[in-house]
Image (cartoon, rainbow, N blue to C red; front, side):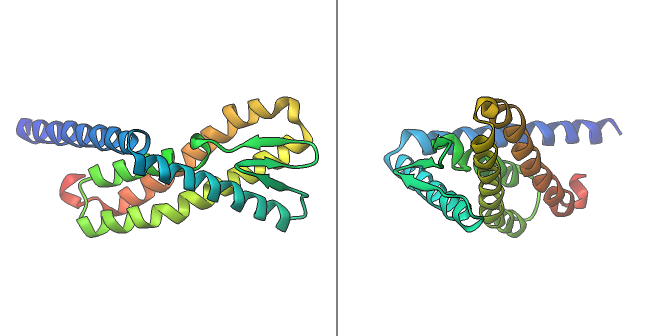
Length: 171
């Protein structure tokens, strides 16, 4: 019994160290390499233009100026923290450090891209609609509510995947 507990503890520590190493590596790649910066910049442009398209689709008069999104009463600048990469890197690191089959890990990492992008766009559209109506309290919604809800939904998706994908011998 004692050896099983020790083995489980060692496996947990190993997974946590792999997770932290992968997460640090993804963030270093995203911010310390020219390719990572270019991907971040491209993601910012895609995120802002997609958000404007979605806002127009629901009848909001929105336009784009670089990565600034403008409505008649509100503007937002899309920065790296808004493009969804942070959540994606977190989910990728967690998926890759989970003791599951490599096929399941790869599928989860691929599935995470559209899921995180969709969650992020929904978050941004809600924030823009709210900011257009209540610009004075936008920061409270954006920092205190939406970021937490976005992170919680991302982690919930990860948990649901891990609950099914983790090998029974590692539970």
